[in-house]
Image 1 (cartoon, helix red, strand yellow):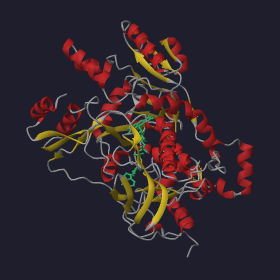
Image 2 (cartoon, rainbow, N blue to C red):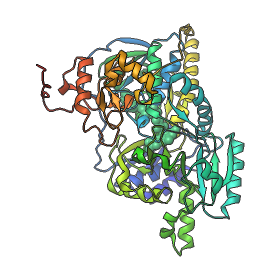
Image 3 (cartoon, rainbow, N blue to C red):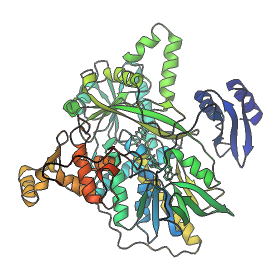
Image 4 (cartoon, rainbow, N blue to C red):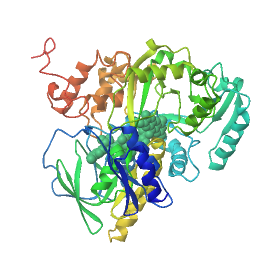
Length: 593
Ligand SMILES: Cc1cc2nc3c(=O)[nH]c(=O)nc-3n(C[C@H](O)[C@H](O)[C@H](O)COP(=O)(O)OP(=O)(O)OC[C@H]3O[C@@H](n4cnc5c(N)ncnc54)[C@H](O)[C@@H]3O)c2cc1C
């Protein structure tokens, strides 16, 4: 679109918004009073043919950003020289770290949170996507297909659970069957294996939760489910076992860039001097690109929430499923009743929705997730869930699995997707600054795609380092295998008895809801990564993830963390320094001093 035309359109959104061209990008500036206008302007400005991307600098009147920052400052990294500095330890950063450890490189990962997987990577559905909803030329499709294929080997190597029950998209009307054939045809052309149209009887053999209104649907066999934070932990632990260093509560604050090269990165723990930087900062990736003087995209955070259903209802569904985007579900019927215009509008909304709209997901841990929705928000770290969202999700899912009621919900969580206005991943070497490599705008299907993206990014970074004269050798000692400690509740009786005889700590149950023993919590604390927060233990072995949500086990978990780390219980935080749980010392147990 010509810039003059765009300016005219922006005027209609808000007269306070304007656009200019700069360094191959479209830069939006000005101020407005609604976040929806900021997003609308960003979307209007997308022109992939003429511009590298949209840099949206429109301010939202009165909005003050609440970026979480580490509470610690020291000089433990001052003057540190590294070959590769990875910013962010979500699944992207962890996968890149593991790829780096295949080479003899000095690699440092900095993460502003108190553990790996504190951003989107622990706040998602864990679906290993098929790729059906992505455009043929998109990077999302390219890396989703490669990542999906990699998952089988990766989960074996890293000891991370993976199941492939497939994904189901239900349809409701006979006239939708031919549309389904077209979707299958395009899916086949995209290279997605195992897509079939099945009638409701055949679908019911795969998943018992076929809704009463569905006449059939598409089953996509390559769809899977994993534990996203376990995958992130395993990738990071394996990288650490192979020599990568991780520093938590360490935030990139600024960069010194000269002649198209990052010379140094300032952090709250001193200045680091990297040869190469990998940007894996999730919802802040555009800020990191700006520090590196290489911003060509903007993240507009998009929030999604899930309701978590108790395991006792886990048997109700076995796969991930939802209605096809080209069907109007009974839930939407009421909204469109009697109005063809509304019906068409709703259909178009469904098809163009930026959420893949999965309603029911059977998790690897036998819970069911209901969600997510897609809501634009200026808050890049929003984690709260509101009543209205919960009500909407309950209503939508009710048409798929009506047996689930409100009392089956044990908790809620939300995550924020790092969407760019171009709605595609940014995976490339820096354009103006050559020693930055972008793993940016990694929104869904990022869990699926990150391992594949990391392969390309690290290969390009190694090529660049070699071009610069560094002799990067392969790491012949690289060990791809990672093992998690044993999970006692999943062991056969005899094996469990033998383990408990060897170490009675495995027989002492600390978390009754999830049946987690003291021995398992001690194992989690012996990770190759620093583990010193309540959430870090919870993500590894699940104390606090059950129905009582930590009501009983938290004091004992705090005690065990204190014992392993030498910290006082009142110094132990929920997620990172600054979120300490206790106000003062806890009362000693009987017999303790
Ligand atoms: C609701 C929802 C549902 C989803 N469902 C799925 C799904 O089912 N399947 C799927 O494949 N994908 C899904 N996704 C997408 C997937 O979760 C993400 O694409 C993926 O987790 C992105 O990982 P990341 O490492 O790039 O980002 P993140 O996990 O967000 O990690 C970025 C890290 O960078 C850190 N950081 C930021 N700034 C700095 C700084 N200045 N210094 C140091 N550290 C910094 C952050 O603390 C954070 O830990 C979903 C996402 C959401 C939100």
